[in-house]
Image (cartoon, rainbow, N blue to C red; front, side, top):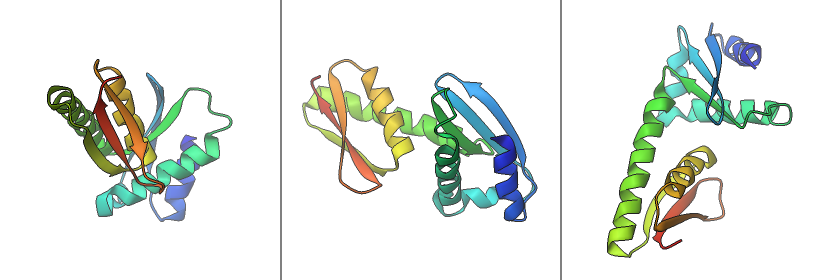
Length: 142
């Protein structure tokens, strides 16, 4: 997996440092190196695309859950922010009785929101929309 990512970087003219590590629910592929910040431009669209490619390439043979591709710990920070937003909206939904929306989000981000909401009693979540980017509705009740 690490060599595959290095080859993609090489095709882009980048010399990437790639570290693959096991995490609680899968595998994290961390990128660094000169020029790696190119993956973070335009709201990290390049990073999202690379993650999609890596997941597609290794989905069948990867048995450790989800593959997360991160660059310069960008996604790690954003994931924490997204989880906190989901917790705040879940609490608001529970307190007000009104559903709360977050998004539009890509599949990876939606998964984080759903996993965060499952740990909060008295609320549930569902994805709405029919495109790649969907909104997550966090509602009171289970």
